[in-house]
Length: 236
Image (tube, rainbow, N blue to C red; front, side):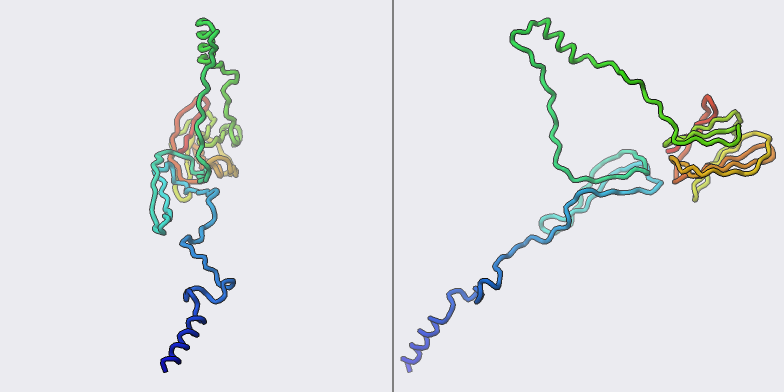
């Protein structure tokens, strides 16, 4: 009996694998392991749009995934005004290295007077050769011969000799209403603009005045002041 048990043990020792955790066919099963999860696409360019009542960006808060898989947040103080029409773009790019200002190369043979002249030449600002650019209006419209509107990105120049005696704003949809003194009769007219903040301008006559209604593309604060040719309507 002892001989039978001894022979059986030897046979099992020859048949058994050295490592029971190694698969039978090493070519079929991979032994690679990893704790790296699949990443989303690399950040390139993200565009954000804001509603028409946005005027300032206070902070930007990013939620990000840490290496341990937890979700964390990073807030950046901005405190800057902006035009809500603009795209706010987030870009991923390598850090920009600051360029050092080249130093003045003064030879050992240069005299003190020559050095002073070279330093003064570098420090003297170059005169402006280009005159300040005058901004042209995006579009100009006129009703008959007594009122004209020059539309800019954030203001409207109202060119008229008539006196404005009332103005107010209407929301949803956003409109600015202005009444001017003039005793004339004409049919109500409307002009589609679609430039800057102005979508449409409508003018209609009443008994002793006429009314101008400016339809805007969003929610604005406005201010009106007298100017040399009439009035300036500022939108912000």
